[in-house]
Length: 450
Length: 188
View 1 (cartoon, each protein chain N blue to C red):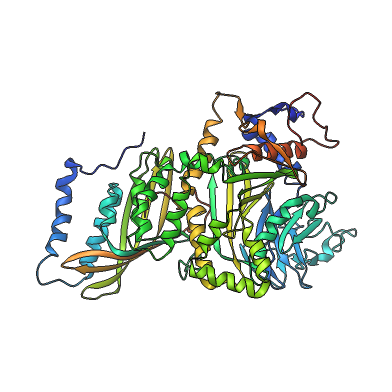
View 2 (view 1 turned 180 degrees about the vertical axis):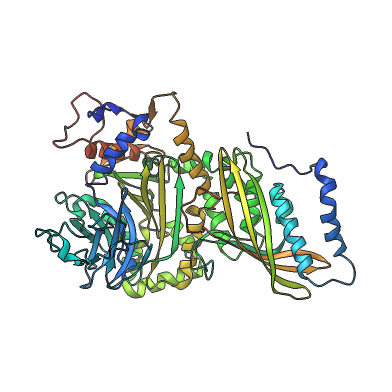
């Protein structure tokens, strides 16, 4: 592998090697997951001092924890003695962390608390050394409850990194009448034999449902609505039918907006008629009443007019504010990826609304869903297909001619069948992967803006 | 290309006969209780239909307002407050089974082959016309060079009407329900 990674790009094309080369994967873990702001979890998962969640930054095991003073920390999940994983449970509450090998004990913020047989260590052994600890990540910041961490001591602030995508996170929260959301309703964990980038590169892809999801679209279209449903099947079937919308819908009603650092979202163009239709739902009417009581009519209307589907914060998280979903990508190896998906409860909203959130999650994120199973099949097939000696260059140029600049430093696709967001992610990829000073594209090279 | 599940497998028919006669004998005018023997026979019949890919026949075992549930967490309290690997009301279950017959169900191209073993059958509640049955199962699924092993506990609520046994609801708790898994496409 050469250090000049720009050779893997041509206008509208990317070389297949960046999805299959384990040396490139190792470099991604160092230069992307080792420097960018990585989504770690939500504050509601660690409400009280001692609450912790075990997770990963790239391949590295870490712990998200609220320390004794109430501060949220992210610490490496490794004993400073002989390297054992310290926290083994997925989540819990603990007064301190203790390694089960020789009993080294740590404060909740990762500082070493006690070492058995300490008299036996050399004189320069300093239990107060911050490197002899469950080492803290240098930067941990929350944006309105969404916790990100970076392994880089220096770099852009979280808000600068998020840029205009803060509005998508705002939309998650603003939809709660009480102005707060909390993680609830369990987790889905999916695994596939393919590269981590493939997952993100599918999340704004409005051109695939008609093909990939054909079986669930057909089965849903043929389903009689007279058959008994407790409400959950009704939501699932409606969503599957929606996937069958013709290209003309995706090319006229839906758009993709992309922003610096690889971020993007897929959204509906606002249409009052859709809101009016929702008003017929009694639960939605109760919800609007709760919103108007807390926020007033104008603010409620403004919130409900924001229509975003998937919002992607590169490189590891995607969320959907309308149905309160969030997906976290965990790269395991160049050809192995695990995805965890979460739901959020809107505080102050009618209880019944959360049932709809769960039904929606089962439909689009469920391990046994009629939709996601075919997406996982695609990721697996790309994983297998890329190992062939077929076409070297992957085509990501659809809609390239009509990319247009938008506010906040972004670039918009003409419509939602544009692959602009993949090009945008890969521009960010090249930016991270090329050590500073990052050379700007040469004039006439034809690659799109960075 | 994927093939549709075969509807009739004549060579296998003679071996199925004892099972059918067991079910048929339940249609006697004086309805027998839903006891352990009849429930166990029914579970074996169900597993056989699934192994044979006769998903339409499997669907026909469910009552018109049945549900089929595979929780995502051990001891999950309900399917409405927590996500589920599968939670199908009758309407969605019909859609699921219809999709299984589609040649464009790419996650079943090629098709899985599966073998289920049902055992440790016990009665949680026995009634004349409705019983709750607990059983253990193991399912080996083979597809495209990979074999997966699933195991766990099933709870069936069985009801009978005119001697015909049907599933009012079925809950399947996988031992590894919270593991990172590739897609689950065929029912347990």
